[in-house]
Length: 82
Image 1 (cartoon, rainbow, N blue to C red):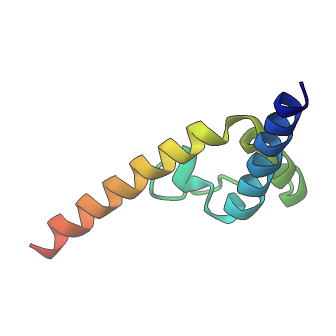
Image 2 (image 1 turned 60 degrees about the horizontal axis):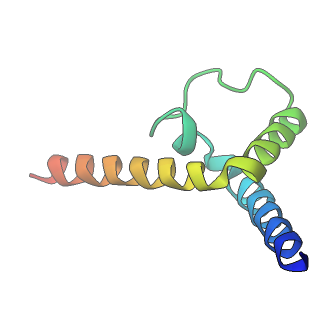
């Protein structure tokens, strides 16, 4: 039983850390590779709290979307160099 609690706690701690460190790059995980104009309609504190709460529970999905965005940007960079 303690292993399950440890796993859950580590999952939540990693997720909140992921959210805290990726807040400034959150447009790469949800809106696409470009930051939308006027996307910050809430106060910075409310936006940061929401992002951290979202990433705490959904960080595996956010990692996958970040990898997808990185792949898209890599392909665009390769095409622009040709």
